[in-house]
Length: 278
Image 1: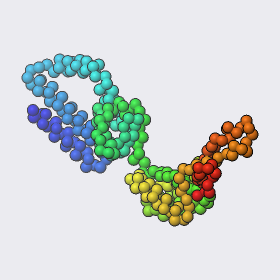
Image 2 (image 1 turned 120 degrees about the vertical axis):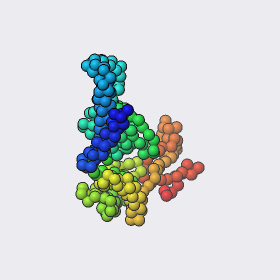
Image 3 (image 1 turned 90 degrees about the horizontal axis):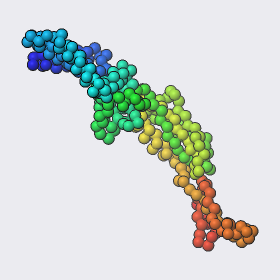
Image 4 (image 1 turned 90 degrees about the vertical axis):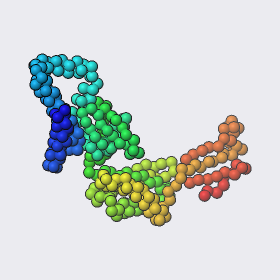
C-alpha cells in the first residue's frame, strides 16, 4: 500500500520537476506520469512477494507468459500503444492544437498511450483510439504560425475589374491583423454566370485567422459598395421567340421560351413581349 501511494506521488513529482525546465511538451506529461507510476508499482509488487518468500524468478517467468497471452488477446490495444508511441515520437500534433481527420475535428486536450481526447469546436467530447489517428491523414490547423485567408467577391460585368481589385487590396492592406509579408493579392478568379469573381488573398497569424476572415468579408463588401461597384445576385434573362417569324417546320419549337444566363435581369409580361431591363 505504501508503494502504491509512493508511485502516485513519484509520477506527479517527476512531471512537476521536468515541467520546471520549460522543455517538457504538454503532450508527454500524462505519459511520463503513467510510465513512472506503473513501473514503481510493478517493482513494489515483486519486492513485496520476495519478502513473503515467493521466488521472484518464477514470478518474472509467469509475468512474461501472462504478458504474452495478454498481448495475443489484446492485439488491438497493443496497436494503440504502438501508434501512441509513434505519435509521441513524431509529434504531428500537440496538446492544444486544432486537428482534423476523416472522422473527427477538434482541439487535442490529451494524448496518452492508448487514446487521444479531443474537444470539438461546439464543445463535444471525442475519445479517439491512437490507431485511428496513426492510420489516417492528419490536418493540423494551428501548427504553422501563419495562415492564408481566401475570400471571394463577385462584381457585375459592367464594373471595372481593375478598380475592384485595387479597392479590395487597399482595404485589406490597411487591416491591422493582415500581415504585410507576403503582400495582399486580389486576382480575377473566374467569370461566373452572373458576376466576375475576385479572390482576396491575405495572410494573418494563426490565432487571428477567423477574426481576420470575418472582418475582411464584411469590410470588403462595404468597400466595394461605397465605391459604387455592384455585387449582383444570380440572375437569368428570358427571351420569347416570335412563332410567326419562324419557318413552319420550326414554329412549334420557336414558341418555347429560351433561357440564357446573363448578368442583367429582364422580365416578360403576359402578352409575350419582353419588358424593359431593370
